Amino acid sequence: MFHNLSHSRSQAEQRLDARSQRVQLGAVGTRCSWLGRNSVTRSGSLLIEVMVSVTLVGLLLSVTVPLMKSANESRRLTDQRRTALQELGNLMEQVASWPRERVTLENVAKLSLSDETKAALPEAKLITKATTQSEPSGAVKIELSLDWDQLGKSDTRSVNLTSWMAGKP
Image 1 (cartoon, helix red, strand yellow):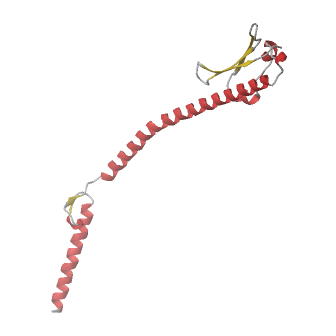
Image 2 (spheres, helix red, strand yellow):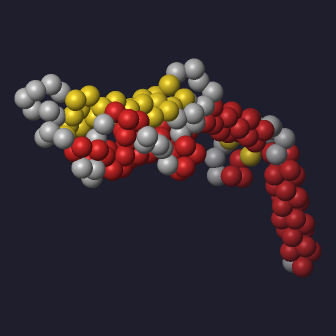
Image 3 (tube, one colour):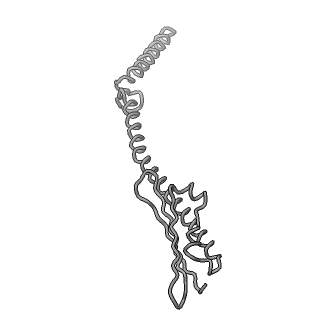
């Protein structure tokens, strides 16, 4: 009886050895029935999965990077336009605070851009006009225009602001 137990243990050990050999062989492409299903493992499947993943990430980056550049450019142009409008609004407010007799073409032409605006807008140019209307109103039309160049591009951007000041000098 003792002999039968040792014989059955050796059979169990043989079955375990055979099973572990199948596990090892299963890694290189044999059938693995011990997984509970009858499947065949594939050699190199991890490499293919990594290559597909890298390709997908590359594709996503190739789409995302230009979108980010475009969004950044749009934000920069919006900031420049906001800066230009704010500067023209400040200058127009300054002119509006002057007495009517001081609002002339010569005085309006003396207006200048702030240092912050000059730094934010490359090659910014302020164009001023003051036109006095003929009788009977004597109103003055004040036009301020701010032009600046886009970095690396040939076209310029422009913002205009017009105001009227009523009354005779």
